[in-house]
Amino acid sequence: MPSRRSNAKDTESFLSALNALDEAAFAKYLPSSSELKSKDGSKTYVWTFHLSSNLNDDDLEACFSLVEETSSADYQAASQGWNPDHKRSEMRERDMRYILVHRSGKEGHNSVLAFTSFMLTPEDDQPVIYIYEIHLSPELRGTGIGKALMEMVASIGRKVGVSMSMLTVFTTNQHAEAFYRRLGYTEDDSSPRDRKLRGGKIKRPEYLILSKNLREQANATTKRIKT
Figure 1 (cartoon, rainbow, N blue to C red):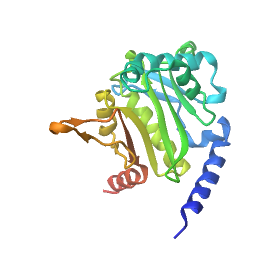
Figure 2: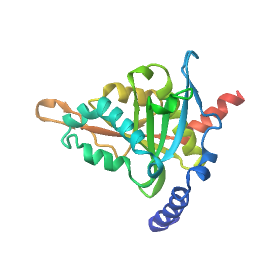
Figure 3: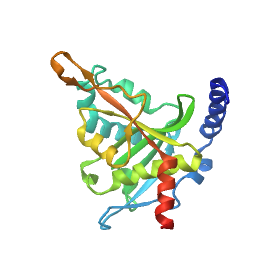
């Protein structure tokens, strides 16, 4: 059986090679179509892919505004609080990748209606695709675009060769937690657990770490196709 040190070294080499790819080289792992349709088919949007180093300041600020609008209250309710400078710094981390959603048409790229950011990173010496953010403007909620973005990231994970997708969710954001669970995410072994207080009251942690086995999903999809 390979040692833990061997696994860690292999994971580091694997991720270093992937994270060294520029946007053009990474494109082979992306969907061939740049269009996203609402679930009722009435509206078409386009997506663009960016490394954090190539994301212009206007687009970064548009993404930050979506985070602030949709999640700052959850941060404020948590012990860590809401720190705009820290969040902007995190969003510029070297290996962060972005998928931005715009309106279709010539003027569409001037606005960011939704985005997801993710990183290929080690967790317990195994390579995973970790979703850092997914945020939608009110205009896109209920359109199926959020689910499409999650499926896109999962597809990228499978194509690059990782077996697990992970994310963190505040327990105060019950809508988001329910959304992720509908997509097959469950509490990871590394996630904080509920605590039983005196008197029997259950206290939930401030956040959960959720994960999804991408290989199991791929096998299940293959079985459905063959049936």
